[in-house]
Length: 232
Image (cartoon, rainbow, N blue to C red; front, side, top):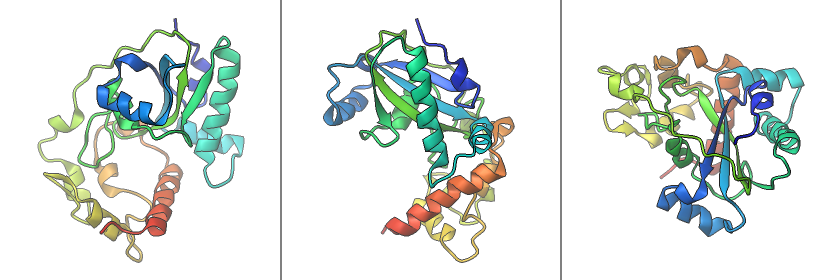
């Protein structure tokens, strides 16, 4: 038994999975248990977006503020839960909840594969997906089987992400994060509000975000970099 996800999918929250807490990787479960009492809870509901539809729904709804995607996602999932959870309880882990390794959860359901950009890559969606809401619940819903699929990066003999990175931060050993961040914060950097390496990746091109969403997301991250400072 699983809930009806159609109201979520209709507004771009179109990837959903249920994880059995007891079946989580040991390190993931221990980290979560250190932050939250897991005894009342049985499952994690993980909700993500793929492609540009969520951003378009946020814009159509006229959501403003500093974090429109988070605010829209929280409100939408809250209303969906009230109408479709059959009285089950929930506790929000993300956003604004307990520390949680979203990539580990994504890996457990087959959404996340490692990429040279240090963001997850999916066989179909490429890098164009994002975790939006994670909930603990006491509902006895059937866990979602992990997706199977090839790792896109393993098929790349001459990865275009490396050649496209003007900072030279994407290499055979992965991402040189300090070099990436230094380049992004330079005056008139072409990477201030986008990622040319990410745009060069051929995986999931049909799911690429709208340019306005890309600018918004990378603008947020640039503000965070400037606020917290560059790594030493």
